Amino acid sequence: MRYRPSRRRPRYVIADVDPTTFLSDSYDAATARLEIRFWYPADVDHEYYRINWVEPERNLMLGFHQDADHPDLGPCHIQLNHDDTPVDRHRASFLDAHPLAVLDDRLRQFPAAVEAIRWENGAPSLPTWPV
Picture 1 (cartoon, one colour):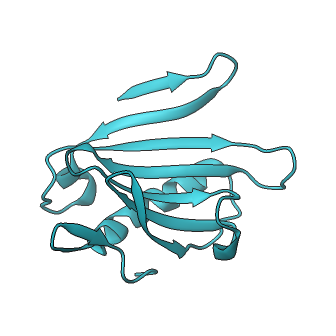
Picture 2 (cartoon, one colour; picture 1 turned 60 degrees about the vertical axis):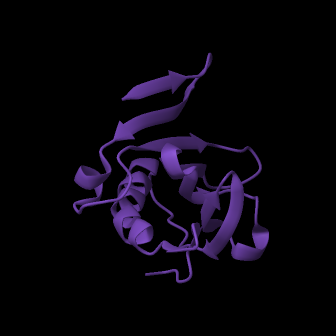
């Protein structure tokens, strides 16, 4: 595990994970990482976060994002990127809880979210959410 602190306050955690161990199932990717960031904007009454599952070999990112980037999806969404381009976004439940509880809940959701990814002609999609 690597930890990348900022100069003033820690903001990121990056952890290399064994996909088969983390997902409790066999998996196509040999390596993956979790990238976790929480921050606290002054103009909102809850924290923002991005909790991402990243597969560098496939240039794939699946993440839960609670921020202001896509207001049409509400305060929280799940996003799938491939080749550094967003390919799917869906509304995700807003979790009004302590950041550690939010992290725990989201980490428990990743196996189902990763399993929901569909590949067709080398391109991923997240056709159904929630699963």
